Length: 284
Ligand code: SAH
Image (cartoon, rainbow, N blue to C red):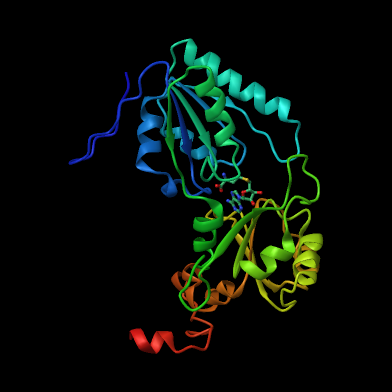
């Protein structure tokens, strides 16, 4: 028996046999799952899930649903990705209701596009359910707004790993340094020293604020505030480990006012007006 979501006023889609729903699971906090993803969890026969996903949410699935771990962390050969995609095709063709769950948003550095392509090429019907990506929602959990009127009109999302897991040579860091007021780096921990050097060489202020958020939205989330020139050393000194999103730009300063988790724990804001623009006075 499936138990599709029932909330008043909304008509929740039914997951039909032979379909694959490719859903984002958000950065970690189960509450950041979308209702469509929850609806899928309640109906799926088979759930194929990733490493960077909070496995606790699998407890919300039907007890009899088959759970298949398809974890793969950066830098592994792409043949494995092909295997995962073809496995999804086989499961769908066998008449299962297949939920493919990926951390964050499936279309943001998540290879969701590749999986959807393979499924569609093989004639498998697909539904895409976006998720909250770590580079937006994860930063919000650290009190860093990815845009702020006084800071940025642009934001760039960039991967610190290329296809082979090597240094990110395919990114024009000098162009980014100039064009993007806020830069959000995924998978950037391994190469942060080289990335910071490239950004500084490209004209970025060495003192530009940097925020590093590990395990964002989870109980063991850690946040490091540093600067571009110090980032790599400070990350080493703090022994921070992936997964982490790294935010470069003055939006990071806003954490001094907006660290809502610290405020909830009783801390006072460090600075109500960290940009020194008087905006808080304007709104009070
Ligand atoms: N599709 C995912 C990104 C997958 S790439 C999304 O939209 O969020 C994997 C990278 O995502 C990690 O190396 C890290 O940079 C980031 N990431 C994912 N979950 C994270 C978390 N809980 N905390 C910090 N970074 C995270």
